[in-house]
View (tube, rainbow, N blue to C red):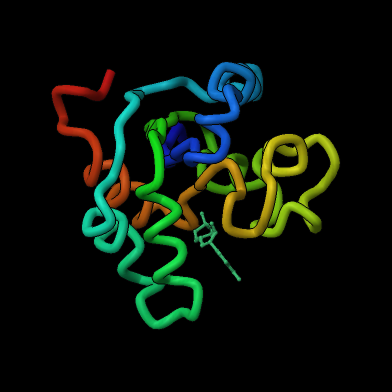
Length: 138
Ligand code: CMP
């Protein structure tokens, strides 16, 4: 069945001018953009979004980084969306990301790794509704 995932282009990729190139790869891979905007998180909002990583050693840095500049969150639709999108973006660590994946092409470090992809249908719904109301989804 067609289902949804959530993504956001992270501050490193937005400020480097890669929003268009990444969005093109996403659409060419067959994902339909259901919702999209440019916005910026406060450190508190980043902390809320990444609350599941609260106990991880990289949490504080991650929240500072994710609130350091503009981001482009999106809700995407495609059959097998969550799994196929994670294949398109590649491994968290760009050094381990397969050639041709978004992180291989655009990420600069394990933290500034260009893009987010939800890890489950449940988290995709939670993360999507963090940024978008039902009136912003088409
Ligand atoms: P993502 O998988 O989208 O969500 C958690 C983020 O934490 C991850 O991307 C990276 O941006 C960041 N991060 C920083 N350091 C690490 C690390 N050592 N392991 C995993 N994620 C990290």
